[in-house]
Length: 110
Image 1 (cartoon, rainbow, N blue to C red):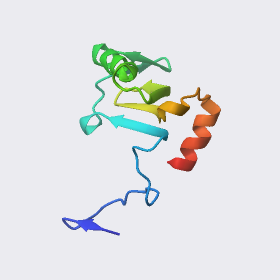
Image 2: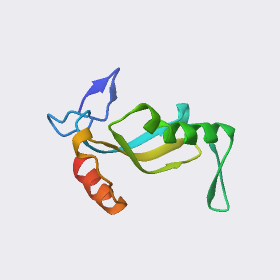
Image 3: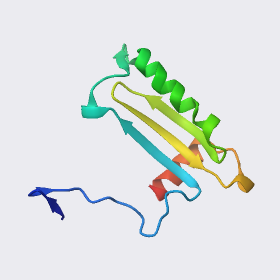
Image 4: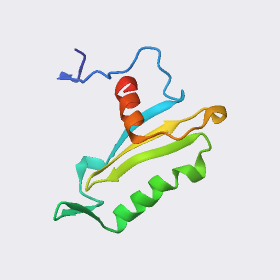
């Protein structure tokens, strides 16, 4: 295991030779700095977005306005992070991805 400044580092678990710009499904996690709860709170078991959480939600949905070869699948904004599945598509083979297929493909690409 690798050390940096006498501390152990967690090695990246990546498929050797995989180019992350290749078409495929990618499970994305975006965390707030120091895991601070900037996006809202969980109230009665449901996420209640605050203003900043609303901005995070809007930004996720606007990804499609900026990229032609991307499809969005399920995502969720949590108090201190955003989880989501993004598919990078080949423009010639764009297709609809069902949630079950996405989960299966993400677990094999991961």
